[in-house]
Image: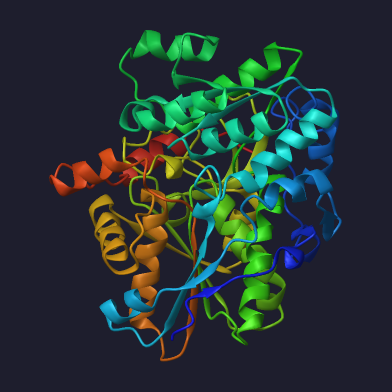
Length: 447
């Protein structure tokens, strides 16, 4: 019988997160105060983040202990399995070995709880009563709602309006966990009302939803803001996935030749590949492949510059690949990938030539998702389908016996309306034009 699942024992789950910052080929560019254009002081971030997470954001420690209360919650779904995709290999005629790290087994159905429970815990320890956040497709909002319930905290979610309308069941789950969720733009914040005045039918964007959540946190003393991607501490928490993959491949005496993940803000891709960055820098021939939408081609067409993390310019300036903070992406069904910027860490390693980026249209990623479901049996999220499409392409190019690992970042059981649109031929393939990129980038600050 073929070995399909490589499963770690609970005792073998990593007890520390890995911080890649000390091992980068050169230091990460610091976040800047938008007023002074100088490196931002930690205390200026304290209005929206707890000090423990600010310290992690700027930490130079290579290893960070995972607190015991977090390990207890992690064991609800971790360690997650590494699965050999035998049937997919056969279907595409590949001689390469394809594995996927299945993060869909979490309560929220994605990789997002890895950082959600951590952020809720650290906020709880500092006396925070409520967390505000944004969500694109709803996976992050679902994860934070779950995490807040684990620590008896309140949670407010601003969900990008086009996804709020496309994926109503996400909102139902968020409310069932006990959180509140509002379509963004909303009339609850100043920035939301401003957008609605200009365009009452606005589909929103992640940059706008971030602005609403940050404004909410900054306006309420008992509230802090939680971000599901982009920031250093988020990718730190997500490295538990890559660390588990290392152990699982060691169990079967394999080494990865290619690591693949979808990229929006960079959390799942960063969590998978960062533990392998030292290996790559030491000369091991490992490829990092990042898959993104043609409608939001941050790594493939964005510029590596300082920009705001949100539309309303409330966040610090961070150096990253960006399409411009004012970018409103088309309402594609991969809502979790509709972000104008890329995580500074992911951007940094990409700038140093360590990442291969590929951009895909909606219909081709749904084709890949359908093939995966018809061979492996599971329905992937549209975001995850980008990684599947890239994996199929890489596997067809690969040498016999090469090992490809992709992060199965979430299931698609709450994305059935997206699949319905695909099956009925109603999906539009939309790209971001060079002129649109030029116009949006013109609004970025000059540093």
